[in-house]
Image 1 (tube, rainbow, N blue to C red):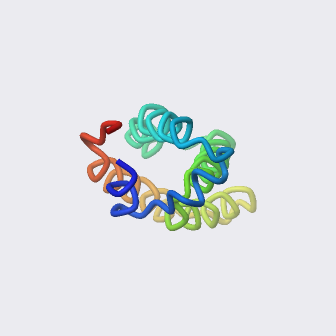
Image 2: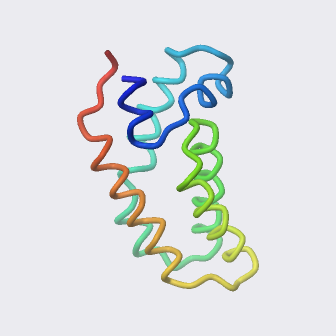
Length: 113
């Protein structure tokens, strides 16, 4: 499974290191990420409350970085900053949701080996 994760953009070495060096725990967190974040893109696309979006963006960015997925984390960091500064655009929200949906499709069917 680690090779598959690397193939879709995870830096698994960084992720395992960030989770205390425990590969099993890292894989549990990846499964939690799938369940807790990737299923919420439809809800987030429709959300208009800036504070709710900023909290989601902050949490998402943190989880992605911890897991070693830095591309979407960087995009989410920019979106979070724009939300906090009230300079965000709906395009940023759409870009993050589109990226998460592509990521979700790539992760579909990943099971611990």
